[in-house]
View (cartoon, rainbow, N blue to C red):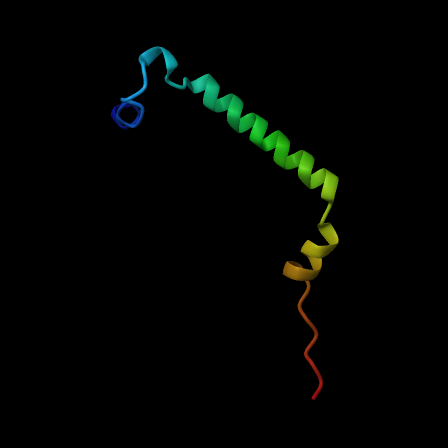
Length: 59
């Protein structure tokens, strides 16, 4: 708790972010990330880039 108070010491106590504010921000961030991933759907690119091994080049 002491680290939390020192980080927001300059802000009035009434205006400091509360735990529920941080939880809501994280929740909306997860929702936004999931929505963007659903919209773009880069699964083929992820598979080609990170999962499949590149074929060795013939000289």
